[in-house]
Length: 420
Image 1 (cartoon, helix red, strand yellow):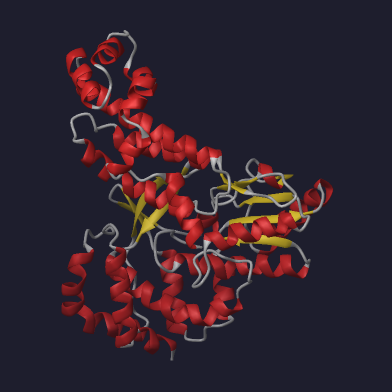
Image 2 (image 1 turned 90 degrees about the horizontal axis):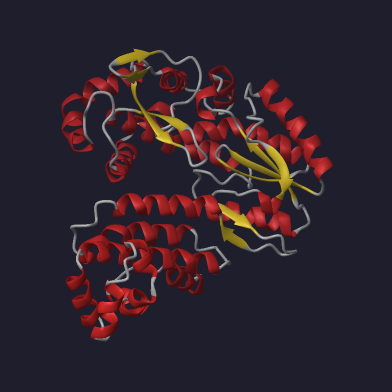
């Protein structure tokens, strides 16, 4: 039976290792990942018996609001670590049952699939002549999932009633906010290991319908784009898909954020593309703005720090961002971002140097003549202007930042594309 496979020692050990490696915040009970082993050792016999008899009830999830990239916020529900362990053990046994049935054009939260593959597929659709995009935005998808419809899909492949009951209880687990627990009538709490698989199980019906109609599409979790040959075709598709979602899946399209537009006007998973016959991938303006905002936040407290520590603080962000946007073929925005980062760091130094004599002394030490150094420090301009002026650029050129270990976005992406 499936529940016995879920609770098998090897499966639980793998689930435990995954939960621990993911770290994550405590749930509503305050238990940390570090405390999980001791708790399991003490109470596992009782918990296992309850799971096997179908008597186990998950605890309420802790409500956490996180900002969405396009504005607004998304509600996360953080299960406690014990429930994360059980959900992960369930996920490991359910994935081999459901994943092989999913569409080749579904890329989110699936083994062997990635956002980069989804982006490349979107580009291939446009390159093949489907140059209009139907951008679908499912309104509060994770909050609106209909439990009965989702469970009907799960029941097609799962017979073990204990597993079905447990999944429904996870769906219906209360949400704790401000010490008050409220019941959940719909939605799948985003934040637990099981949530992405459940969303894919439900939205696979949309994939099947789109494939039946022979549409070119790509889906990453609830981010779905359909590519067509004309605006009129796109408007027809939008109307029919909206009806399908409403009638079959009880989901609502956000009409303000859903639209039909030329493909190069529609960003997807942080990327945009050019209008060339063979479109070129680029970093979207929104993604660039988010990086700048994140770096401003990190550099806000940099005034009293050593530059080596400041660089150490921002490098992981620059490295991770470069890794995600390694598919970008438009180099100028990357050069501009690198230049902006160096400008910000020179501004940090200019502020740290504080007075004219310290600034002149440091500029001289960095290779400027004494006359030019003194002239530059007495120009009456502010820190941002000075940190972008020729005297600071000459004193602190790119090669000096390279020696200090600052990650260059352009150099990193060029290196990654050569490796690929």
